[in-house]
Figure: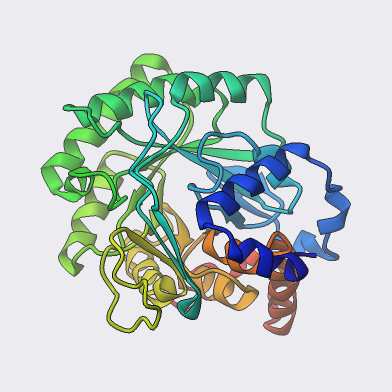
Length: 348
């Protein structure tokens, strides 16, 4: 059905198409059985000590305001991440702010954390409990002077119904956000988050989402801090505001974060480096260019415990999860692996 509708969908402005998708998903009309896969038990895994039916997740950015996560679980995702959620409602940057780079199977976005705000989103999730493992991605409002306080507020307000909380320090579309990659800034933020967790008795695990544009020497420093502060997960990685040199599409120089196929090898190589240093002590979620069973397998064998996608679904439609799972099952059988968890890090 998607292949028939795709020319019409791609004739629309990307943000109009996205809003239409959200409205369609609110109807919640597709049966879960439509996306079932045979032998999926081989894909069962654990993330943050939670059993998942499979390691394929939806990245933050699609369901920004937690409106349709239960409809999305029907597509067969093992877990879903909503957000980025900020303390107050935020309209984001001026439009147009999403660009399809069809020749490169990529997107560039400069949305700027547009969402309904933490109060509305907390109420929405508490009244519509997730049908699966739900992560909530949090970040600061654009106008906030003290960004740390925004993270603390969101953690306090949103953790109740979250399976895990992601600390987004890596979007290129909020000025100063990536400063949290600096050692002192990150230490201060993570220490403050742990203090809030202790005071509020929050047990949900925390993952930190990093930029693909970090330097080699940053990796060791980030891992040291993550281990010292007992952060349970690292998401590798967010969108890139670099890496435009080899792109073909005329829209390649739009300002914003690049996602999709051009990030596939960049993020996979980063995963390998993080896995070698963490040796499985910290869970890694791999993001960037996942649109097939093979690309998911590459990230898992590089050291990712689970993967996430978003741009791949834009180009291939909602059946992408089913196709990835079928291909992954076939690869595992060919490699004589009894379970997907046996593949984690074998090529690192």
